[in-house]
Length: 316
Image 1: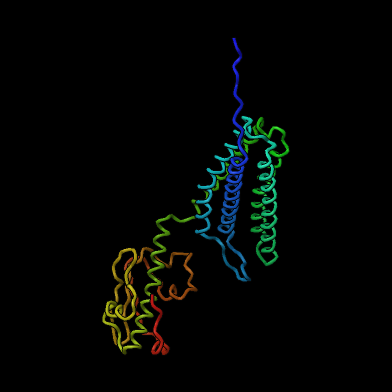
Image 2: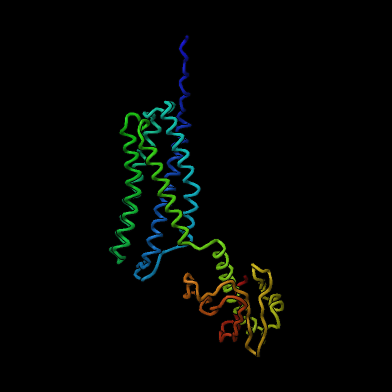
Protein backbone atom coordinates (compact mmCIF):
# COMPACT_ATOMS: atom_id res chain seq x y z
CA UNK A 1 0.00 0.00 0.00
CA UNK A 2 1.56 3.30 -1.08
CA UNK A 3 2.55 5.63 1.67
CA UNK A 4 0.40 8.77 1.93
CA UNK A 5 2.23 11.97 1.21
CA UNK A 6 1.63 14.86 3.53
CA UNK A 7 1.91 18.19 1.80
CA UNK A 8 4.04 20.65 3.71
CA UNK A 9 2.10 23.64 5.05
CA UNK A 10 2.19 26.80 3.00
CA UNK A 11 4.85 29.09 4.41
CA UNK A 12 3.69 32.35 5.97
CA UNK A 13 5.04 35.21 3.89
CA UNK A 14 7.03 37.99 5.49
CA UNK A 15 4.33 40.64 4.87
CA UNK A 16 1.73 38.39 6.52
CA UNK A 17 4.09 37.62 9.40
CA UNK A 18 4.69 41.36 9.81
CA UNK A 19 0.94 41.99 9.97
CA UNK A 20 0.49 39.24 12.55
CA UNK A 21 3.33 40.38 14.77
CA UNK A 22 2.52 44.07 14.55
CA UNK A 23 -1.09 43.33 15.50
CA UNK A 24 0.12 41.03 18.26
CA UNK A 25 2.53 43.67 19.51
CA UNK A 26 -0.05 46.49 19.40
CA UNK A 27 -2.75 44.49 21.18
CA UNK A 28 -0.23 43.29 23.78
CA UNK A 29 0.76 46.90 24.42
CA UNK A 30 -2.87 47.97 24.86
CA UNK A 31 -3.62 45.05 27.19
CA UNK A 32 -0.50 45.61 29.32
CA UNK A 33 -1.08 49.37 29.65
CA UNK A 34 -4.80 48.92 30.35
CA UNK A 35 -4.18 46.23 32.97
CA UNK A 36 -1.52 48.37 34.66
CA UNK A 37 -3.81 51.41 34.53
CA UNK A 38 -6.63 49.38 36.07
CA UNK A 39 -4.41 48.21 38.93
CA UNK A 40 -3.23 51.80 39.48
CA UNK A 41 -6.85 52.89 39.81
CA UNK A 42 -7.45 50.13 42.36
CA UNK A 43 -4.59 51.60 44.40
CA UNK A 44 -6.01 55.11 43.94
CA UNK A 45 -9.42 53.89 45.10
CA UNK A 46 -8.40 51.95 48.19
CA UNK A 47 -5.38 54.07 49.12
CA UNK A 48 -6.87 57.38 48.13
CA UNK A 49 -4.57 59.95 49.70
CA UNK A 50 -2.18 61.42 47.19
CA UNK A 51 0.00 64.54 47.04
CA UNK A 52 -0.26 65.99 43.53
CA UNK A 53 1.55 69.33 43.18
CA UNK A 54 2.05 69.63 46.91
CA UNK A 55 -1.62 69.32 47.91
CA UNK A 56 -3.45 66.38 49.50
CA UNK A 57 -5.96 64.89 47.10
CA UNK A 58 -7.16 61.76 45.33
CA UNK A 59 -6.47 60.45 41.85
CA UNK A 60 -9.19 57.82 41.45
CA UNK A 61 -11.06 58.32 38.20
CA UNK A 62 -14.25 56.60 37.11
CA UNK A 63 -13.53 57.58 33.50
CA UNK A 64 -10.03 56.05 33.63
CA UNK A 65 -11.38 52.73 34.97
CA UNK A 66 -14.04 52.59 32.25
CA UNK A 67 -11.48 53.31 29.56
CA UNK A 68 -9.24 50.50 30.83
CA UNK A 69 -12.21 48.11 30.90
CA UNK A 70 -13.09 49.00 27.31
CA UNK A 71 -9.45 48.57 26.25
CA UNK A 72 -9.19 45.12 27.83
CA UNK A 73 -12.51 43.93 26.40
CA UNK A 74 -11.50 44.95 22.86
CA UNK A 75 -7.73 44.40 22.75
CA UNK A 76 -7.69 41.26 24.92
CA UNK A 77 -9.49 38.97 22.44
CA UNK A 78 -7.40 40.40 19.57
CA UNK A 79 -4.18 39.62 21.44
CA UNK A 80 -5.20 36.05 22.29
CA UNK A 81 -6.44 35.43 18.73
CA UNK A 82 -3.19 36.64 17.18
CA UNK A 83 -1.16 34.64 19.71
CA UNK A 84 -3.06 31.52 18.67
CA UNK A 85 -2.51 32.17 14.97
CA UNK A 86 1.22 32.66 15.48
CA UNK A 87 1.53 29.62 17.74
CA UNK A 88 -0.35 27.37 15.30
CA UNK A 89 1.81 28.56 12.39
CA UNK A 90 4.97 27.83 14.39
CA UNK A 91 3.66 24.41 15.43
CA UNK A 92 2.76 23.44 11.82
CA UNK A 93 6.06 24.68 10.49
CA UNK A 94 4.42 27.36 8.36
CA UNK A 95 6.31 30.03 10.29
CA UNK A 96 9.96 29.47 11.04
CA UNK A 97 11.26 30.26 14.53
CA UNK A 98 14.17 31.91 12.72
CA UNK A 99 11.86 34.23 10.77
CA UNK A 100 13.51 37.66 10.82
CA UNK A 101 10.22 39.50 11.29
CA UNK A 102 9.45 37.38 14.33
CA UNK A 103 12.92 37.95 15.78
CA UNK A 104 12.86 41.71 15.25
CA UNK A 105 9.36 42.22 16.66
CA UNK A 106 10.08 40.01 19.66
CA UNK A 107 13.21 41.99 20.54
CA UNK A 108 11.34 45.26 20.05
CA UNK A 109 8.72 43.98 22.50
CA UNK A 110 11.43 43.16 25.02
CA UNK A 111 12.98 46.61 24.63
CA UNK A 112 9.69 48.45 25.05
CA UNK A 113 8.76 46.35 28.07
CA UNK A 114 12.02 47.38 29.72
CA UNK A 115 11.64 51.02 28.63
CA UNK A 116 8.05 51.34 29.86
CA UNK A 117 8.83 49.52 33.11
CA UNK A 118 11.81 51.75 33.85
CA UNK A 119 9.86 54.90 32.94
CA UNK A 120 6.90 54.00 35.15
CA UNK A 121 9.17 53.09 38.06
CA UNK A 122 10.97 56.44 37.74
CA UNK A 123 7.64 58.28 37.75
CA UNK A 124 6.36 56.28 40.73
CA UNK A 125 9.59 56.78 42.70
CA UNK A 126 9.46 60.50 41.93
CA UNK A 127 5.99 60.62 43.47
CA UNK A 128 7.38 59.11 46.69
CA UNK A 129 10.22 61.65 46.79
CA UNK A 130 7.61 64.38 46.27
CA UNK A 131 5.77 63.21 49.39
CA UNK A 132 3.47 60.45 48.19
CA UNK A 133 2.78 57.58 50.55
CA UNK A 134 5.06 54.53 50.66
CA UNK A 135 2.28 51.92 50.51
CA UNK A 136 0.96 53.43 47.29
CA UNK A 137 4.48 53.39 45.84
CA UNK A 138 5.08 49.77 46.76
CA UNK A 139 1.76 48.61 45.31
CA UNK A 140 2.19 50.53 42.05
CA UNK A 141 5.81 49.42 41.70
CA UNK A 142 4.73 45.81 42.27
CA UNK A 143 2.05 46.14 39.57
CA UNK A 144 4.57 47.52 37.06
CA UNK A 145 7.19 44.88 37.83
CA UNK A 146 4.66 42.02 37.71
CA UNK A 147 3.37 42.95 34.25
CA UNK A 148 6.80 43.80 32.82
CA UNK A 149 8.47 40.68 34.23
CA UNK A 150 5.64 38.44 33.00
CA UNK A 151 5.95 39.68 29.41
CA UNK A 152 9.75 39.88 29.41
CA UNK A 153 10.32 36.37 30.80
CA UNK A 154 7.88 34.75 28.38
CA UNK A 155 9.28 36.39 25.25
CA UNK A 156 12.86 35.87 26.40
CA UNK A 157 12.17 32.17 26.85
CA UNK A 158 10.49 32.02 23.47
CA UNK A 159 13.52 33.52 21.75
CA UNK A 160 15.91 31.17 23.54
CA UNK A 161 13.93 28.01 22.80
CA UNK A 162 14.99 26.20 19.63
CA UNK A 163 11.51 24.87 19.01
CA UNK A 164 9.92 28.27 19.84
CA UNK A 165 8.10 26.57 22.72
CA UNK A 166 5.92 24.62 20.27
CA UNK A 167 6.47 21.43 22.24
CA UNK A 168 6.09 23.08 25.62
CA UNK A 169 3.06 23.51 27.85
CA UNK A 170 4.29 26.98 28.78
CA UNK A 171 2.30 28.91 26.11
CA UNK A 172 -0.99 27.33 27.18
CA UNK A 173 -0.19 27.93 30.85
CA UNK A 174 0.75 31.55 30.15
CA UNK A 175 -2.46 32.14 28.22
CA UNK A 176 -4.63 30.60 30.95
CA UNK A 177 -2.90 32.60 33.68
CA UNK A 178 -3.21 35.82 31.65
CA UNK A 179 -6.92 35.19 30.98
CA UNK A 180 -7.48 34.49 34.68
CA UNK A 181 -5.69 37.65 35.80
CA UNK A 182 -7.53 39.82 33.27
CA UNK A 183 -10.90 38.25 34.15
CA UNK A 184 -10.39 38.79 37.89
CA UNK A 185 -9.27 42.38 37.29
CA UNK A 186 -12.31 43.09 35.11
CA UNK A 187 -14.70 41.60 37.66
CA UNK A 188 -13.09 43.65 40.45
CA UNK A 189 -13.35 46.82 38.38
CA UNK A 190 -17.14 46.59 38.28
CA UNK A 191 -17.17 46.94 42.08
CA UNK A 192 -15.42 50.32 41.97
CA UNK A 193 -17.31 52.07 39.16
CA UNK A 194 -20.81 53.42 38.96
CA UNK A 195 -23.37 52.12 36.49
CA UNK A 196 -23.83 53.81 33.08
CA UNK A 197 -27.28 54.94 34.23
CA UNK A 198 -25.88 56.66 37.33
CA UNK A 199 -23.18 58.31 35.22
CA UNK A 200 -25.84 59.68 32.85
CA UNK A 201 -27.92 60.99 35.75
CA UNK A 202 -24.91 62.76 37.24
CA UNK A 203 -24.04 64.25 33.86
CA UNK A 204 -27.57 65.60 33.35
CA UNK A 205 -27.57 67.07 36.86
CA UNK A 206 -24.21 68.77 36.30
CA UNK A 207 -25.55 70.23 33.06
CA UNK A 208 -28.63 71.51 34.90
CA UNK A 209 -26.44 73.25 37.47
CA UNK A 210 -24.37 74.88 34.72
CA UNK A 211 -27.55 75.90 32.86
CA UNK A 212 -29.02 77.50 35.99
CA UNK A 213 -25.76 79.35 36.61
CA UNK A 214 -25.85 80.67 33.05
CA UNK A 215 -29.51 81.70 33.36
CA UNK A 216 -28.70 83.54 36.60
CA UNK A 217 -25.91 85.47 34.89
CA UNK A 218 -28.20 86.24 31.96
CA UNK A 219 -30.90 87.55 34.32
CA UNK A 220 -28.32 89.79 36.03
CA UNK A 221 -27.18 91.10 32.65
CA UNK A 222 -30.78 91.74 31.55
CA UNK A 223 -31.59 93.56 34.77
CA UNK A 224 -28.65 95.95 34.44
CA UNK A 225 -29.39 96.60 30.79
CA UNK A 226 -33.14 97.19 31.07
CA UNK A 227 -33.53 98.17 34.72
CA UNK A 228 -35.99 95.36 35.44
CA UNK A 229 -36.25 91.61 35.64
CA UNK A 230 -37.48 89.75 32.55
CA UNK A 231 -41.09 88.65 32.72
CA UNK A 232 -40.13 85.18 31.44
CA UNK A 233 -37.23 83.23 30.03
CA UNK A 234 -38.78 83.57 26.58
CA UNK A 235 -38.61 87.34 26.85
CA UNK A 236 -34.96 87.20 27.83
CA UNK A 237 -34.25 84.55 25.21
CA UNK A 238 -34.99 87.03 22.43
CA UNK A 239 -32.10 89.26 23.54
CA UNK A 240 -29.69 86.76 25.08
CA UNK A 241 -29.76 84.02 22.42
CA UNK A 242 -29.76 80.98 24.65
CA UNK A 243 -31.99 77.96 24.95
CA UNK A 244 -33.27 77.48 28.54
CA UNK A 245 -34.25 73.83 28.01
CA UNK A 246 -33.49 70.79 30.17
CA UNK A 247 -31.59 68.46 27.82
CA UNK A 248 -33.13 65.28 29.27
CA UNK A 249 -36.80 66.24 29.61
CA UNK A 250 -36.68 68.79 26.77
CA UNK A 251 -38.82 71.07 28.93
CA UNK A 252 -37.90 74.66 29.83
CA UNK A 253 -36.48 75.48 33.24
CA UNK A 254 -38.84 77.34 35.55
CA UNK A 255 -38.31 81.03 36.21
CA UNK A 256 -40.49 83.59 37.96
CA UNK A 257 -39.90 87.06 39.31
CA UNK A 258 -40.70 87.27 43.04
CA UNK A 259 -39.85 90.94 43.61
CA UNK A 260 -38.23 93.99 42.09
CA UNK A 261 -34.81 92.34 42.04
CA UNK A 262 -35.52 88.81 43.30
CA UNK A 263 -36.55 85.73 41.38
CA UNK A 264 -36.73 81.93 41.57
CA UNK A 265 -35.13 79.32 39.33
CA UNK A 266 -36.40 75.72 39.40
CA UNK A 267 -35.25 72.40 37.91
CA UNK A 268 -35.84 68.68 38.36
CA UNK A 269 -32.74 66.80 39.55
CA UNK A 270 -32.20 63.05 39.42
CA UNK A 271 -29.83 62.94 42.39
CA UNK A 272 -28.85 64.92 45.45
CA UNK A 273 -25.56 66.78 45.02
CA UNK A 274 -25.01 66.41 48.78
CA UNK A 275 -24.51 62.64 48.36
CA UNK A 276 -22.08 62.81 45.43
CA UNK A 277 -18.49 62.54 46.59
CA UNK A 278 -17.26 63.33 43.08
CA UNK A 279 -18.82 66.83 43.00
CA UNK A 280 -16.13 69.50 43.08
CA UNK A 281 -17.55 72.23 45.31
CA UNK A 282 -14.60 74.46 44.43
CA UNK A 283 -16.47 75.04 41.16
CA UNK A 284 -18.70 78.05 41.87
CA UNK A 285 -22.01 76.79 40.35
CA UNK A 286 -21.88 73.71 42.61
CA UNK A 287 -21.54 75.96 45.66
CA UNK A 288 -24.47 78.13 44.63
CA UNK A 289 -26.83 75.42 43.44
CA UNK A 290 -26.51 72.67 46.05
CA UNK A 291 -29.62 70.57 45.55
CA UNK A 292 -31.62 67.56 46.69
CA UNK A 293 -33.16 65.03 44.32
CA UNK A 294 -36.46 65.97 42.71
CA UNK A 295 -38.03 69.36 42.00
CA UNK A 296 -35.88 72.09 43.56
CA UNK A 297 -36.32 75.88 43.45
CA UNK A 298 -33.59 78.40 44.22
CA UNK A 299 -34.45 81.92 45.41
CA UNK A 300 -31.99 84.42 43.99
CA UNK A 301 -31.33 88.16 44.05
CA UNK A 302 -29.75 90.16 41.27
CA UNK A 303 -26.02 90.26 41.87
CA UNK A 304 -24.37 93.56 42.71
CA UNK A 305 -22.07 93.57 39.69
CA UNK A 306 -21.78 97.05 38.17
CA UNK A 307 -19.65 95.76 35.29
CA UNK A 308 -22.77 94.11 33.88
CA UNK A 309 -24.23 97.55 33.20
CA UNK A 310 -21.82 98.05 30.31
CA UNK A 311 -20.63 94.53 29.44
CA UNK A 312 -22.98 91.83 28.23
CA UNK A 313 -22.48 88.09 28.73
CA UNK A 314 -20.95 85.87 26.03
CA UNK A 315 -23.53 84.04 23.97
CA UNK A 316 -24.22 80.38 24.86
